[in-house]
Picture 1 (cartoon, rainbow, N blue to C red):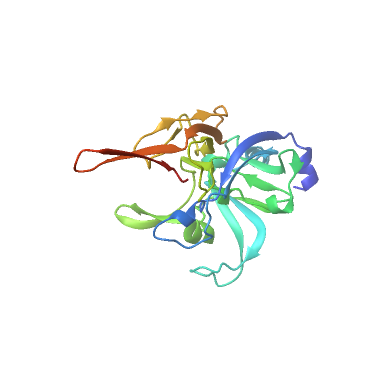
Picture 2: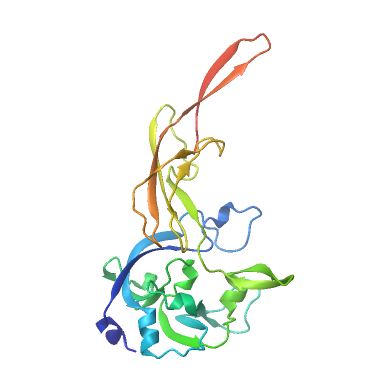
Length: 268
């Protein structure tokens, strides 16, 4: 199918959050391999394209196809072990049940504009609810397969150890986990005391809805409800805010019974 033919087909638009599976990796203890992302490997955008299931129906997808394999134009040799014997393309597969959902797009626009090269021009997959590695950029090929796909990226890189019948097995990452992030104050930012401060951020999940958000200013001892700024929308993040007075008080009592009061600024 040509690019022009794809653009001529009826299109749909979805708002979706994409998060790298390594987002916040820098905070893991012990440290693990991979790009040491802090909090910036996540985004929320409006995507326009043709539902993948429309293309699969057009191709008369067979009943025994179990996965849909997406291949991108990017090609190279990974640096981390185990290193493949030759350069490989970036390839990822989706379970059939996910691939035929209406939210999965073969997209050619982001926020109303044609994709830029960095975002996957000319076309890319958008797989709402799954980590970003499933949304293959620079898409060149879509293939239906009858056996589970065991490519490098799904078995060596974006994979984790699980147990099946008491034996260790490698499973590919898939659905995003429930998560919230604080965008303001920034990481390591110090705040002035005795000030009213608006803490804000976003919360998202994979195939479910985020319905509640709370903030703690004392290391998790107590929690206060924050306010959502966005309505519930499946596969899209919900921004939130929380009004905070940046002063906390500590009081000491010495052996003679006298009390001392002191204020301290809470650092983010």
